[in-house]
Image (spheres, rainbow, N blue to C red):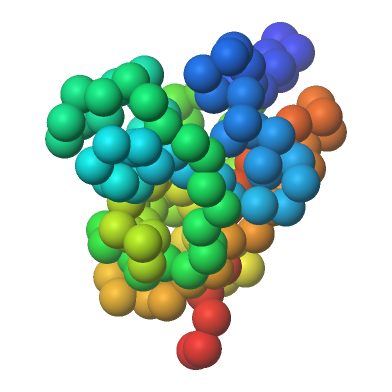
Amino acid sequence: MSETPPRPLPQLDDLNRPFWEGLEAGELRLQRCADCRHLRYPIAETCPRCLSGDAAWERVSGRATVYSTIVFHQLYHRAFADEIPYNVSLVELDEGPRMISNVVGVAPDAVAVGDRLEVVFERLPEGVTINRFRVVGR
């Protein structure tokens, strides 16, 4: 059997570095447009509402609600073989933006639309910190 390939990792650049540095510091940070004040995710050079290129990074609460969820049983990348099955969830942050992540701390099929969540930070062995979410108030 061949060796497990490395996990795909984010490529840091000037645009996304504040997001990843925030996770490393235990903060979920998003961009807020300096002109129209739209809070946005995913990370972008311009605001999707007003097309301004001026934005600042802002810490958000990390509280969210499951908007949609699915359990992956199919292996799509060999680096994740030991994690099958796992959930992939679209979560809506209390501040409005939605992001795709995983809900941890419960069985993959126990995640339900409407579950209340809070962000958690996971330091990977490769030295990168990622955000995931856990159910609260259940």
